[in-house]
Image (tube, rainbow, N blue to C red; front, side):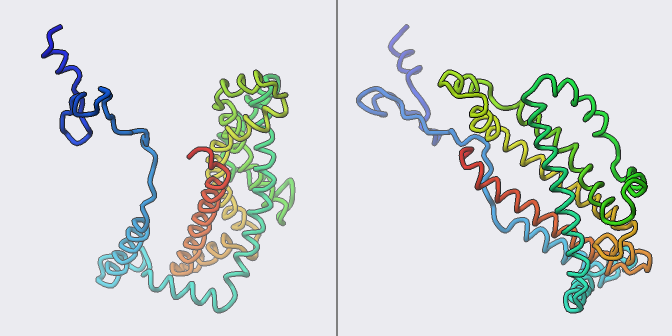
Length: 289
């Protein structure tokens, strides 16, 4: 190989489009390569979502006032906000919201707790996997709303049927997300723990569960979104108070302002739940960063 070829192959880019030779990089002949280990990690960009949301509301408000959007299609955001203020001042907001939150909390707690426990068992034991995975696969695609009349027959039209529907609706997606998360844990870490003399329970507690936690929390987002949908469906049947009952009453009266006010409450509830799960992820999954 000629000296000119050696000099050419020894050159390297310094990250700014300039060619740096070993002599320019240092007397030791080492090449200074810029660090590019950040990968595709997302960076928080504040304010963009608020700007998009505000622009959407302003566009609807302007279109409604100019006559481009019919009030029978979309009510003005200002009218929906005025309706929400009336809900707040009259006390009806909490009269409808508190029963919905109670049903959502109790039903989701039962379904998610059972789903996480059974999902971990499926991920850890081959016998449990062989017995329960086909059952979960058969239950998962069933539309849970279609089972509401059956739950009313079984548990009555009171609160028990609503709890059962929400629990069942959150159970199956939580099971699937949990055992998939357990399967995705790096088995090299398990073998490393075994080589250090960790027992079975210690490996599950210190390696399997923390390693599966990102997938479990991601599954919770989906499960709780399904829970909100089932909550509304359950409250539209035999509930005097609740966000679903409020939306059903507004729809029967063709009161779009009240109907959209209820939809906004559900949307805010979903954002709050998603933000709470994000906060839990930042606290529990510090090791990922």
